[in-house]
Structure formats: structure tokens, C-alpha cells
Length: 140
Image 1: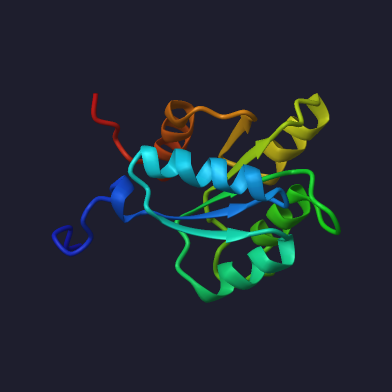
Image 2: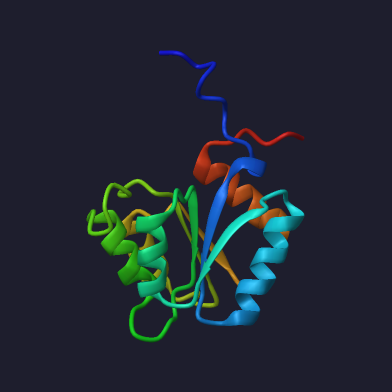
């Protein structure tokens, strides 16, 4: 194995997909990502849009809202985990939602979501969750 070719991932090389039907939430999240050094972002307002982006681009991590019209974030996450969107079964997914119901949190864990953040999010909490999900060692 040649580790010189596979440099460790850093936040400035991460591509993040923000999936949220609320434009304000997407903008807020994008600003928080920018503040922590993630400048490569894609946005989707629906699960269908997100599916297309996941199939078309190299996405490193997904920030996923739960409550969306047509298809919930958990349904999209389940499709990803079941391999219905191609070879992305292990794509790190972080649920970012206002939903604090125990059932939703437990469902997210059972599907295999990496992290769960409750809105409103802070850039610091977002950074910590993304670094954990991607296995990036945080600099102190």
C-alpha cells in the first residue's frame, strides 16, 4: 500500500452535500461549513436531487435534514445504505434536523448514520461531527 498517494483527508479537500428543503437552512449550513474550512459544497432541496448529485459527483459526507416533502432524510439514508444509489453504501451521513424524537434518533442509528445534530447547529459542533465521521484527526 502506497500512502504517499493517498494523502490524509483534510477539511479543505472535503466535498459536502447539504440536503435540506429549507433554503435558509442550506445557506446557514453552507456558511458554517465555510467557517470550518469546507469550501466544496453541493446543495439539494429534495431527496431526488440529492440522489442525482450522489450518483454524479464524488461526495465525501452528506448533511441530511430529516423532515422533507416527498421523501424523508431517513428514507434517503436507507436507500444509500442499501446500495440503491450505486457504490455509496458507506458514505458518511450526518443527520441535521430539528427532530429530537427518540424514535427518529434510534432509526437513524439503526440505518447506520454516523452522527446526529440538532438544529440550530454551531460551526464547532459541525466540525467535530464531520471530523469524527470522516476519521480526520482534529488539530487542537
